[in-house]
Every structure is written in C-alpha cells, then in structure tokens.
Amino acid sequence: MADILHSPSPVPPTNLLSWFDEAERDLPWRRRGVTAWHILISEIMLQQTPVSRVAPVWEQWIERWPVPSAMAASPVGEVVRAWGKLGYPRRAMRLHACSAVLAAEHGDVVPSDVDVLLTLPGIGDYTARAIACFAYGQSVPVVDTNVRRVVARAVHGRAEPGNPARADLVDVAGLLPADSRAPRFSAALMELGALVCVAKNPRCQLCPLTGCRWVAAGRPAHDGPARKVQKFAGTDRQVRGLLLDVLRGSDIPVERARLDLVWTTDTAQRDRALDSLLVDGLAEITDDGRFALAGEG
Image (cartoon, rainbow, N blue to C red; front, side, top):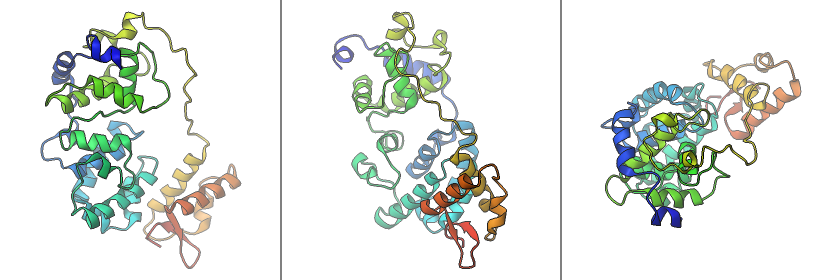
C-alpha cells in the first residue's frame, strides 16, 4: 500500500479519465434516467456474462419490471424464463428474492449504503459497491476481474492477479482520486481492463497509463499457478441448461419423457442435473408428476 501512497500513481486519474472520455462504450445502463434498481439488475446479469448478451435482455427486463415490486409480483418461474440463455439461472432467482425484500422492506428503493446492500439476497462485495458507486456516486472501491488485472499489472508488476483477496479493495481505494471524479474513475478503470488491459494479448500500445510497472519490468510472464479454465461441454451445467430450455419453452408442465430426451449420453448425470434443479428451486414437480419452472406447476 505504501508504494501507492508515497510514489507517483501508476494509474494517473487525469490520463485515465481523458482516455475514458474517448473510449467509453455507450452501454444502456450508463445512460441518463437509469435507476439504482436498473443498475442492480445489470450488475447481476453481467457476472460471468458478456455485455453483448446482457444488453438486449436488460432492456427487456427494465421495461417489464421497472421497479422491484413489479418483479416481486411475478412468479419466480417467469423471471427464470425471461433470464433465457444468460447462464447461471440461480442469479435470476436471487434477483426475484431481492426484489421482494426491496418491495417489502425498503419502499421499492434500492439502498445506497454498502452495509445495507450487503444484506440483500444475491448482493456481494462487488455488487454492493458497484451500486453505491455507479447509482449513487459514492467514492468506494469497485473491484471486478478487469480491475484486479489492471491493478496486478500497473501497481504490482504482475501479469495476473493472485487469489481474490480484500487487499484488492485496499489497493483500489488508494488509487481513487480524492474528489468527485472517483465514481467515473472507477468506471474508467473497469473499462480499461475490459478493452485494453485484457487477459490475453493486452493492447499496451493503446494504454493511457504511463507508469505501468508490469510494462516497465518488461512484461514478465505469469509465474504463479495456471488459471483454471471452466469447461462447459459435457458438464452438469450444460445438462441443467438443456433441461431448463425445455421447461422455459413450454407454457404447461412437461412429462418426464420430454426431459429424458435432452441428454441420453449419461442418464445418471441427467438425473443428477434434474434433481439439482429441484433442490435449487428452479423447477418443481406437479401433483400429477410433471415438471415445470418454479411457481408454474
């Protein structure tokens, strides 16, 4: 932390913000009139999902559910159906649960306090700070994967960040300008990691930072443990997705035989995936033994 406070910043705010003025993407959740609820939805959707897939779904959601109480009044199954192909559908369930708490306990308004936000279903360290920063203009460190990579390189001279740690929050807090520019600086830092300081083949020639310690060290290769790459094909996640596709595509509960057809390679895996959907509350069994999305049986 001392090298951040007592040496020239490797992430000069003026340089970064000038770059952001030119490079900022026109993302719908950054436009005027967007509420804290809309930003909350975008942040949940953007977890492990590309912007290009999120944007059109987000547009539909804020039109359909402009306030938390509107979503809370809908069956959870409808929310899961609207989630579509965004992946990790439990996020949709958590959003529905969050909407119910906001409607019942917070007057249909997303709180601005980080500690209060952390009490909401599905809201963790990153999302709470992102809402406080981007919806309410607070000077709080917002640390996602892109920011961690920028900090690892620019501040610590490493090719890749280490294991997630609260130290990242301290590092980023030390970089924030001590004035009203802090929220925009946070957005710019994230954008830099998304567009320039990318994981593979970083575009250092386009980077506005003049004090990157990784570049100064000759861009040394990552010398830590190899990052684990999550595969998708053939996993329980894929099978769960195929089963949910059948349930989302039907307006009425479906027979077990229809679900059995989606994955014949490994029937034990299919059964395990279906059981997990029931345990997670994403699906339910009707009284006559058919299957439906939660709340639609």
